Amino acid sequence: MVYTQSNSMTMAKNILLTLLFFGLKISMSGQERDVLPTAEQVQWIDKEIGVIIHLDINIYAPESFDYSKKETLPALSVFHPSGLNTDQWIKAAKSAGATYAVLTVKHGTGFCLWKTRVHPYHVGNTPFREGNADIVADFIKSCKKYGVKPGFYYNTNMNTYYQAGYLPMTDEKRLQYNDVVYRQLEELWSGYGKLFEIWFDGGVMTDRTTGIQDKVDRLLQKYQPNACLFQGPVGARNILRWVENEDGKTPYPFWSRINAVLNHDGKEVISNGHGDPQGRYWVSAEADFPNRKQDAWNGGWLWKDGQQDKVFSAGELLERYYTSVGNNTNMLIGMAIDTAGLFPAYDSKVFKDFGKKLKERNSSKAGSMSGSGYSFEIKLKSPQKINQIEILENIQSGERIRSYRVEGFIKGEWKKICEGISVGHKRIQSFEPVETGAVRLIVTAASKKPLIKAFSAYNY
Image (cartoon, rainbow, N blue to C red):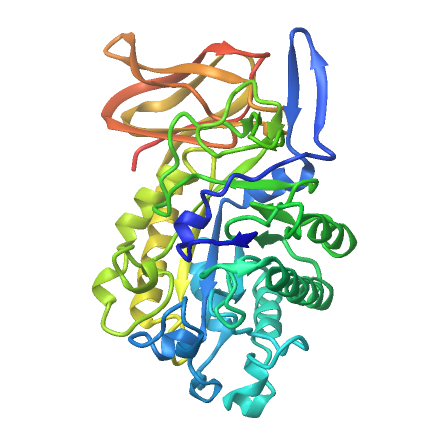
């Protein structure tokens, strides 16, 4: 048998993942089961905004490198990010409202940002800091310094150095490569402390002959049992899923609960999609996108000189906040580190401006309330304009709302402002400004009595 996989990050994410979920809280209530998140999933989605930081050796040879050709790998001697400053990365992330950060410790080339003992193609064999650098350790230290939760991205399937994933590979070669993956994951997960999130781009191979899923799952249980796992392996807790695009736009409606079907091998498989309000499993979702547009080099994930015009504006980032966090998913923004080892000044300014917009938006709250029931009314101090509402369910008790309507008390009568279907952790809706003295949320369908963590009106 020969294994072949595309080198496209987007195509890799379309792999269906077989999932057998352990530790999920399921209890019967009437005719419908309550499917609830783990404590770690609740903590994770409460963080709302994260970053995924990309630094790889191919940024030093953007014109000549080809993922499918090992001979185009840049020489270790070219890697010298003399100004590298992980504090600068994390401070920029925090200015954009990020509360967690994922570092691509090994991206598609196979080059490692730590001194792996498995092979020589790593930062310790470069001129940078005379071979004494450990960028992963620096990243962890900066996260701790600034109170940001750390995570690692390690692609288990793709590696130019080992010619894995980009070209046909025999079973023997794949199994040899799997051993490399296993030993490097053990180094990472045992050597840098507790991780908040672990990213498996394209999942983990499940094939019975050449897969590594079971070994990875056992390793997770040993070293990182509480980490949230983006496209993680079968059998693990705290699974996260993708929203099927790299543009930060979650489809609506969107449910954290999902179902599984049987594939041609008789295994349970889960795709992503909208989810199902009566789904059997709770799998939170993350909407990832680069801070540079997808027509930039390497899909915008990695830095290349002269592409400042490809950087998303602060306004465009705010739009993606509404279509991710405002649609029951977390927002994960890419950060492309340059050859000097810094998040570029222009990109940093955009992050800061986006953070200011978020603060301005949050300070424009006109009123808020919480409670349980089917109707919630906010009485404003005086008639004023509003143009956004925000609803948060208490997801520790599940996603209960199935549909809702929002009304404003306008010129002496209640008039519909907007309506919707799913809510979950957070639902933000914008509309044309209306002047009103009160706003009310009416839940028109629910699986149980709704538990509202917050219902708020904004004039932003």
